[in-house]
Image (cartoon, rainbow, N blue to C red; front, side, top):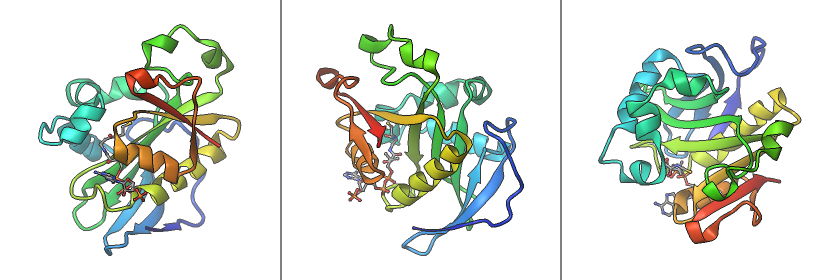
Length: 203
Ligand SMILES: CC(C)(COP(=O)(O)OP(=O)(O)OC[C@H]1O[C@@H](n2cnc3c(N)ncnc32)[C@H](O)[C@@H]1OP(=O)(O)O)[C@@H](O)C(=O)NCCC(=O)NCCS
């Protein structure tokens, strides 16, 4: 995927006011599909996100994420309150939400019950997490590596002192390959491999 950042962007700070968005780049995929890259999600894409999250036929999404509860049955607004910053790929032809990458503060390794009591990193407020989604028919098109790296670069400009980690089930092959592609390293201390909880950290 080729990404063409927008020039002379208006200044913005993150997280943005809810429902606002700034187009930060255009992108062209290997198969010729064209996309907007936005920071922030406008309301019409939140509606798409809700529908996609409820889609039972998307077994990868249902098996590997909590999006059904998070966005489908739960409230985007409630989720957003936790300081989340979404980046999205919007297909120019269909106006479909193609991919979503979001960031937000979260203690390193959190999710595994084993580490829930360790609030040290939260106090330091240094760790932010990244989560990635792509949706049919755009999943598996090799768009995510470049898009995710670009989103990280923009996010890090706004939060230069943070560290970024990703947590996934180690059987989620696409996500495991993606974090490797974007240069994240295995963190043994915070992973819980008997529970299939794989923690990787940006170098
Ligand atoms: C994880 C996810 C965001 C990756 O996006 P994607 O569109 O599949 O990714 P890409 O097409 O850019 O491919 C990324 C890598 O995964 C590999 N890959 C993608 N789908 C795969 C599959 N089904 N099996 C094996 N490898 C796969 C690609 O080959 C590529 O690796 P490579 O360049 O080393 O060959 C996407 O699969 C997804 O949304 N899954 C459901 C939600 C989810 O699990 N999110 C992560 C939760 S932690």
